[in-house]
Image (spheres, rainbow, N blue to C red):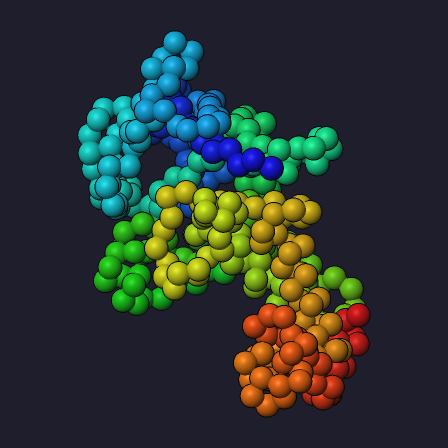
Amino acid sequence: NKKVELSLLVLPQWLAGSPKQDANSQPFGGTAQDDAVSTERWASERARRVSLVEVRGSLPSSLEHEKTQISTAQGTVSGRGAYTCASCGTKQGVLDSVRATGKAAPFAAYAVQGQASSLANPAYNGRFFTPYTDFYARQESAATQEWEARKHTDLEPYWPKSVIPQGITTTVKDVLPNGHGFTHWWTMFNPRQRLVHALLLKTICTVGSYSESAREVVLGAFQQYLRNQNLFCIWDSGYDKLVPHFSNNNFYPKNNAVENNVFGKTGRGNWRASVEGVLEGLEWARKPWDVVSTAHLARAQPHLAEQCSGKSEKVSPGDPVQEVAVKLASSTS
């Protein structure tokens, strides 16, 4: 049970970046506006360069890896909204660089966190990190190609095409359309996320002969899942888990986005976890409860307060929920 400090380092060859085109002068994609073919080239190129080093214990100021001395005190971020090119050493603003392309910034994954539940007495609950190799890049590319093939056919009605409306935090401050290239709602998701969301929404709307009320209940899980599966989710190192979008009330783009496993049994914000919240709500509709303050009980019913150990206590008032909610709970059970 002893806690051990752990650091995961991305090696310099990945941080050095890649040119705008491959050896055959074919352009790299990777942005929200790029096609599947160029994005596949980009994913493969970035995966080819990635390499990770896990350091357990206190992180030294430098370390040697494959006879190369690496400084752990320096990275490519050189200030708020600025970075230093690891290839040429030029310091420049992120917003200026992105705006010059006329598109959103390209995203590239560098690590996957997995879990090996079969390990005996696993450290870190069996979780581990592995580089985002070409194996994962091919998975991503397959999803991108499928999205490209279906977005204007069977999935056409199930993804947003409207422009992000103007507002003080999206235009005047250059946060979204004018600066970072997020012009439409769909640009806030990568192709794999758009494919997943459209498939889920199509299923909710069309599968089976369920009532409209039942479908609306599942839409509650869907809207919660959207918060946890977009390019504005981050990894909170303090909590050691994904943090959903709108944890802060703004659209500020994130440098390190996190994409969760859709149907995994573990992890925050996956589809299973989003559905659980809806099921808990339905159970509450059948057997409603409330929370009463122990301090209030001490004033109103001192003998009851003596039986409480915490600051509050869950109580069942026994009053019925509105009839419509009861019917809804019964129809979706």
